[in-house]
Length: 534
Image (tube, rainbow, N blue to C red; front, side, top):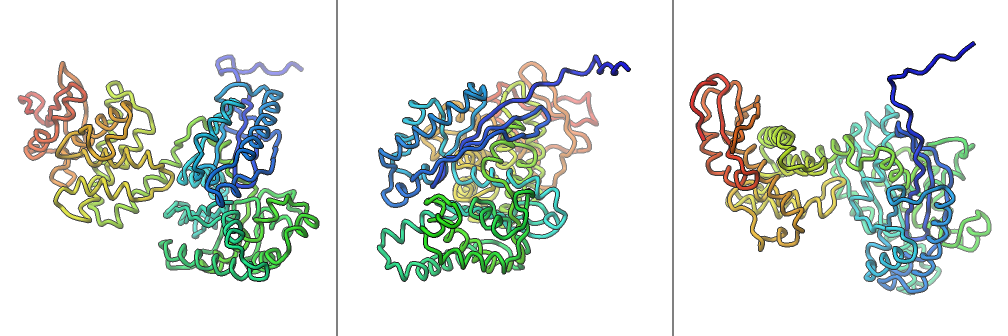
C-alpha cells in the first residue's frame, strides 16, 4: 500500500532548534541543553551542574574573588565545549543568566566582562522581577492543568541562595509578588561571619527565619489560609525525593505540610558532613538544604498551607519555555502584568472606569499608529500599564498629580516588570499632561536616545486617549482612524457633542503634533459632511 501524500499546500515542518540555558546561582552553575520544536515543545537532551562559591563570596565579602571568577570561567569553557558538540554556536541559541549572588556583587561588571571575554557567553545578571517572572513561567503549565490551583489560593515559593521569591496566586492570577533577602547561603554565611557558637547556630537560625517569615506574612495581602504551597527549588526536590515513593517517575509530587515540616526539622539538625556522606549531596548543597527547608516549613505554617506541591521545574525551565515561544512577553505574562496594575490602581483608589477606558483607547491608537511609531509589543504593554496608572498620583494630591504618579510608580512593584520598565511607565504617565519631556527632568535625563523617543511617542498617544475621555464618563467608545495630509483623523460614533474633547485635545494635542507631525482632528460620524474642528 502506498502512503498518502502529505498536503502539498502545507508548509514544510521546521527542524527542531537545539538550545542551551545557563543559570549561575549562589552554589552552582547549571546548564540544560534541549530541543525546541516549532510547536513550542521542549525536549531536554542533557543537564550539567558544577558547584561554585559565588554566594559565599558575595554575601560575606561583597565581591566575587579572583579565584572564584577563574573557576567560573573554567566551568563555562567546559559548558561551551559541550554546546559545540550539540551544534550550538549562535548567540540566539543560548540564554545565560545570573541571580542575586552576581547581581549584588560590587565587581559584577568586571565578573561579567571576564566571563564574556573568556567564553563568549553573554551572562546577564537579571533583576528580581525577572527571576519572579521566570519562576511563574516555569510553573504556569502546572497551574493551568490543576483544577484546585485554579479555584483556590496558592503560594509559589523559591528559596534560593540569596533570596526568596514569592508569588500569591488567586483563581489562577498573580495578585502579589515580591522578593525577600532571605536566602539559604546568605543566612549560613551571616552566621559564620558573626562566629555564632556551633551549639547555638540552630537556635539563631530558627529565630532569624521566624522573624523574616513573620514580616513576609504581614506584607502579603490575604487574610485567609493558603491551601497550597508550590515549592520550586533543588532543596524542595531533594525533600520530595526522600518523602515521595517513585519520585523519579513523576513530574510533580504532593506532600502533606506535617510530613514536610518533620523532614525539614530532621535535616536541619544533621551535620553537613553527614548529609554529604549519607545523601550524596555536594558540600554546597548540604550547607544550604537545612536552612532552605526550614524557610519552606515556616512559610507553610504562617500561611496555614496544608499541602506542598513540588514540581520538577526550575528557573531553567522558565528560560526554555520563553525560548520555545520565541517571545519573552507572552499574552499570559501580559495579562498578569495588567492584573497586577489594576490591583495597584484599586489600592490607590483611582477612577478605574476612566483608567481602563483610557487604556483601551491608548491601545487602539497605538495599533493604528504602528507605521509611524514602529514600536514593538513590549512598548504596547508599557503604554497600557501607564494608561491604567496615569492618575495614581491623585492618591497623594490633585495638585501636580502627574509628578506624584511618577513617584508612586517608581516606588511600586508590579509583577514581572524591571526597574527600567517601571521608569518608562512612570515617565509616560508623568507626561500625559502639562509639560513635555525636558532633558533635565528626573528619570528622563538617564534615558538613552531610543527610550527618550519612545517615551515621547507613547506619552503623545496617552495624551490623546486621555483627552477623548476628558468628561470621565466614557462617552467616546467607538472610533475609526484615518489620515489626510498633515492630519490624523479620529471619527467618533455615537457621540453628539465633542466640544469638551476638542478643548482637551487643543490643550494636550501639541505633543502628539510635534512627535508624529500630524494634527489630531476629531469628527462625529453622524455628520460626515460637517466641517472638521481642530
